[in-house]
Length: 424
Image (cartoon, rainbow, N blue to C red; front, side):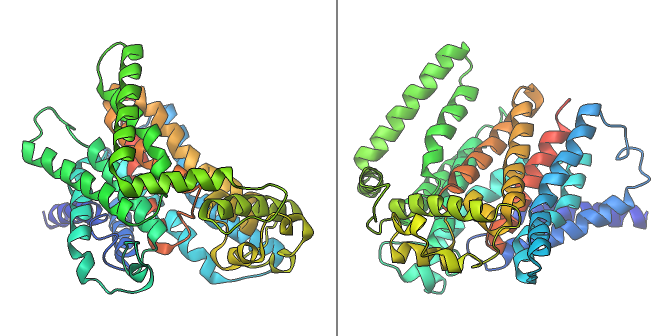
């Protein structure tokens, strides 16, 4: 009796931690790592208690059994890539294991969510919109340092504007995506999700960062297409028509969006491939990508580690298009692209690990989209992963401990839920 009661309390505690994990992700420093560690400890405890339980040890389908090692490999890949790179270079530094370790330690949480068929969307449909509203309300009372003191840029004291902006826009669309999870959803809950989503979009715009915005033309048609129950071609046409209308109205009515989009277009068109470019946000990112490709070619196997490419930043091959400021900026802020940065720092292993961690979950979620039982989970998960991969094109999304911990929690939750419903 005492054992059963203790187990039930532990299960409830895990559900509580999972539900609360996104709540203060942008307002309390260390919150995401703390909740991840707690969830992992609780899941390990429950896995050990359940190891002889026939229900949790039930035979899986071949398809599910095949997917489990794929997701585990993807989660272990980043830290493995760092280890291999450092071993090849014989250059050891423990701090570079901090962010990748978040994905590795999340494996037991993935296994428990999958085995116990926990639907994380049922938990996050409340906490994610609430987290955006809380962030908006408490921001004036948080310490005003770092990015928060830059004119025209909103953020919090530990989250840089790029991370802050992309998390807000991602959470906004997750809020919209969770509307009407069931037919009898209370109107107050629907209102909460609409308000939370609107606040998230507002915060993203106020951050002054365009990170993640390009995911909207991809995600919005998907959300509309899946939810419009008509002929697939009619649904597709309606989805794209509404998407174009929404984007056009937003562009015309929001001065900030209008100015940022126009500036991006101007910076792309004014970029020169064979001569030095002015220091612009988009121009620097294009140069970073070209610099990264050059450095990767020089050391494709072992990578360079952090700042290992310092002696090559004045090489003629990159000096012809990247000015001194841009070249030196990459030494401190890296390449503003998850794929490029990991390829340069950790070599081919870093690039493969990044591709695995993005596309293994995406492939699983796309497979789930074809199943009626897993459609909502797949839609929610693909929304999240699309914003992550688009954001990763213009900034490092997993380079900080708090963003890595948040992504680890989200990815294992979504993959565990998707896998458990794969052949239901």
